[in-house]
Length: 58
Image 1 (cartoon, rainbow, N blue to C red):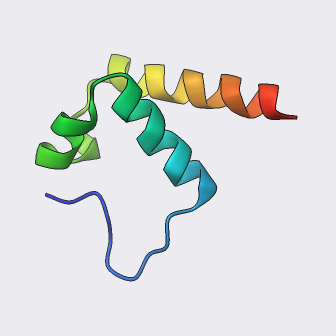
Image 2 (image 1 turned 120 degrees about the vertical axis):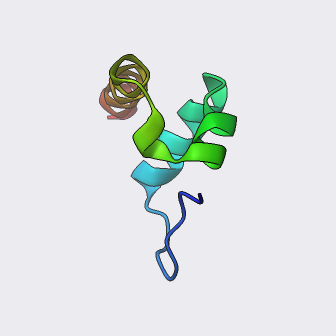
């Protein structure tokens, strides 16, 4: 199952989320099963890192 929807251009937030998922070693799982198969802990880690990076960017 692909995380990419037809015709949808990834936003900067999408790109950041993908980058963090790759850094955490979750990209293979997401590519194979989709974002919905992540555990709450895995999703929370991605969200927490995204928030931290976006705050530090300003």
